Image 1 (cartoon, rainbow over the protein chains, first blue to last red):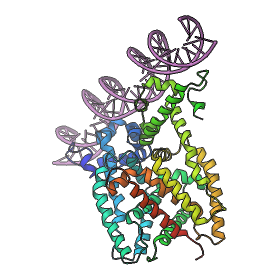
Image 2 (image 1 turned 90 degrees about the vertical axis):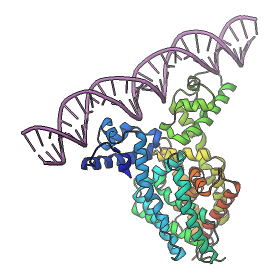
Image 3 (image 1 turned 60 degrees about the horizontal axis):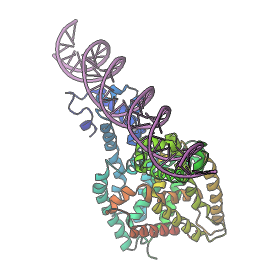
Image 4 (image 1 turned 180 degrees about the horizontal axis):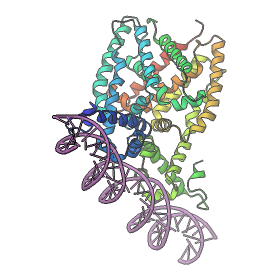
Length: 216
Length: 216
DNA sequence: CAAATTCCTGACCAACCGGTCAAGGAAGCC
DNA sequence: GGCTTCCTTGACCGGTTGGTCAGGAATTTG
């Protein structure tokens, strides 16, 4: 996927050095784009963080846009994945809790990826727009039907499945996207494991209390 | 507040034209900064949207940074306000529902303001950092104590008050900050009143179910 | 209406930005 | 070790960006 963009068709072989440097570049680009957005980021900045000169970086990715596309492509699978695991055959409460926990772990382990998507969407999703209206919409429609099925069977309180999904996205991603604010309010430097446990406990409890066990 | 920055001490009187043009500029700046962030936005862009030339804009605000500060200052009171209304003397469920509804209305009526803060925080809160660690932290500490009081009195399920507040921020602001994504998933162009009602109903139900009426 | 003040603009500037290119240096291969 | 391919870099380029400035136009004030 990455290789399809990076240095596309410019060398005969794909070398070890290419592999290494493209990874360095994409790591740096993730950091820079997720903080400054596409327009706010500079190629120099990315190159410096990747430990190389600008012309050298542009030897691997000919254009700034190519870097952005590559780093978005590299992370967007990871983005859709957790929801795909929501299993109609499972226990509703357990499935939803597991989904929340997976998403929260992603926010903890890949905060920059989360922020990159936040940036992309704040800017009107110029790149991911089509994916959102396509694959993501299909996926949400699908899983909303699963949740609606649970509700119809009386196994879950009657809530709008789509807005429930939005709530889960919002609350979990918040810990990555707004980390600066959360740190400021809670005090301390980084979000501690304790604080993540507290977040997880609160989310589980509110969501499960809010939708648990149906019929009312 | 704005006048303290704009054209500070450069004219003797404060004129009608100053008032009008500074407002035009700040409206335009809100739009542009909230989409592109500080670095991604250009002064030309803001000037064009405000319907004036760049030198003319710079006659009112000498530097790009001054515009950014002014537009953040103008909106950040509005930001803190809804939480301040949370009243220890009121009924817990009613107070929290009212808070959620107020924040959701703010996201609906001032989505660009919400996005501006999201941008600022994604960029590490270079300007608002001090405010977050100061006024906002104090406010949250204060209101968390109120909620903890309700919990101790058995009028609310035992949840971490701070993380509950984060959840409310996350879910309500999500409808402004990630509007593009929500529109993509729900289909349609703008978020309809119906969809806002559905969001409100879902939020009210999940939060109230999740924390309602205490003791368990 | 005329003087004082404020407002507006075109022309301009230095710094920065994305991107190119020629040429030398390092790896890989036989 | 020599040939081929790949990697790296300094110098450079046109366009954009934030910001200045001199001077003319509009507005306010007496």
